[in-house]
Amino acid sequence: MAFKSGFIAILGKPNVGKSTLLNTILGQKICIVSAKPNLTRKKILGIKNMADAQLIFIDTPGIHLARGLLNKYLVKQAVDSWRDADVVLFIAEAHTPPAEADRFALTTIKDISRPSLLVLNKIDLAGEDYLPQYESLFSFSDSVKISALTGFGIPGLLEMVAARLPDGPQYFPEEMVTNEIERSLVAEIVREKVFELLHEEVPYAVAVLVDEFSEKTDKRITYIAATIFVEKESQKGIVIGKGGALLKQIGQLSRAEIEELIGERVFLQLWVKVEKNWRKEPASLRRLGFV
Ligand code: GDP
Ligand code: MG
Image (tube, rainbow, N blue to C red):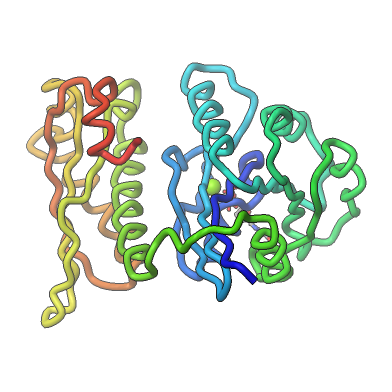
């Protein structure tokens, strides 16, 4: 049989278990699982290497009824990510009946001619079986019941996805994958802390790039240097804070989470730089990993 590879987009309203599912599939904490919905703003690639397939997952922001501008942006980002996908997974909770948000999410893929799988999660929780109701919402290619938490049904889901991918090469060599993912996770964590500690306009003008990620084996400490990019001098001042207090707090919170993620002691050095209008400059966007 030919080798299969391709991109898989995960669609579903907040809290149905998308991040948990990716973590279980990839065997480590890859994307940020959070009690706070809509925290995952940038799409993160998670890659599952199988004997005869490479599955490249795209984590998308939780889709929901868009009101504000940012919400509209998040929805657009999500929709864009499944335009590029070869297979779309629609995740919902097995024990909860379809809601308005599920119908809304499904309308966003109605014109996309990709195989779409209905994945009913959390079947470890007792409850009524809402499979028929979900199936009646959309013409799914297939359906499967899983528990992202216990791992039940995951091997079957992976086989189901692999079978629907096109023939293709192994796009990413295996070692590279982990390294790139760790870097993007660190950037995501730092960005998330800025997002949590600052309000209003500044967080959306922030991008984070990891400059160095090196293991100092003798000291058993990982040295990480990252730059927080902002658009204006005034934003730089805000991110640094009085006497550097805010940047210090961003660093402390990030370090704790990164240490938990990689299971090692971390020395984290953060820099703040102004890159004028990076959100509008294609070259800056490329360098910061957005395109
Ligand atoms: P996301 O917003 O769709 O990414 O959802 P998360 O992955 O962040 O999960 C939301 C919550 O549901 C978390 O508290 C998870 O622990 C929980 N959860 C996810 N999958 C399962 C599952 O299979 N069973 C149970 N009982 N809880 C789950
Ligand atoms: Mg999530």
